[in-house]
Image (cartoon, rainbow, N blue to C red):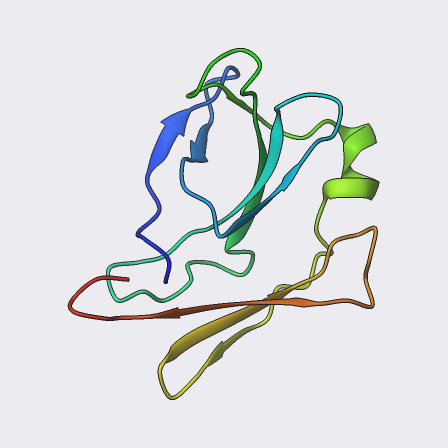
Length: 116
């Protein structure tokens, strides 16, 4: 299950999510690309593109984050479409990495014991 997404300030000053649904690890350093789902209080995905992508710059510190650069989008970025569907248990968001558009990833949310 996913926890409610909080925010923290990036180096550029824009808010970025601090918790992620999943992440990709790098082999050359400890930095990670995170994919975070923005949820409202009812655990419903927020907006037409509820999944945000950002770097967790662990080489610089545990709370350091950055947005993806334009040259990184073809590898780590997401396709524009992020359909959101209601399910019997909660919600589902389907995303696809630009590098693997034919392999979609479903992220599901549900309310369990009053928490997302």
